[in-house]
Image 1 (cartoon, one colour):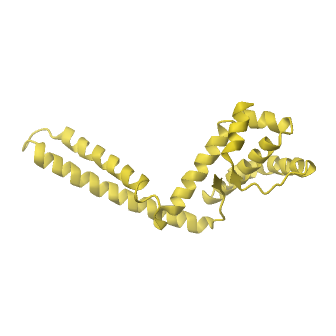
Image 2 (cartoon, helix red, strand yellow):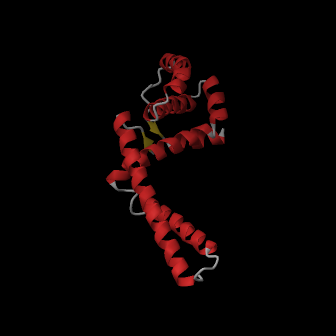
Image 3 (cartoon, rainbow, N blue to C red):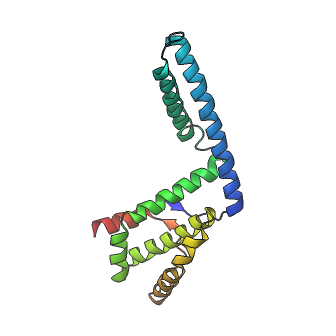
Length: 173
């Protein structure tokens, strides 16, 4: 279950820039070392060693991905980037069933109403974290109308968690 957490957008951007730089430097170092090693071990002096260079870069990509998704994933320095990735992934899961969400909201289905509210709150946070105020401005009217509809139905508008059961419910309808 994904839950929205309060984040300072400026601090988030600073921390994600730092973690991106760390991962990029790690990848560059791995790619250079592995390419050089491949050329040294398997290459021909003065020959065409392009395939060994590409192989080293490819190995660098794979090792970097394994490190990021493995031991680095739980590290504090990567936490803001992981949160941003999980937020965007959660929003994509809702987007994938948005046609069902829209139908459910029109039919006053409480699950669809909660899911759309989470989507709005998550999208708002994503726009704030990414400093995308123009996209946020377009949603304000739709969000206010949805909140009013939820309040009229007596539903809680504080939907900061994405319950996977909500998605399963809409997929089965």
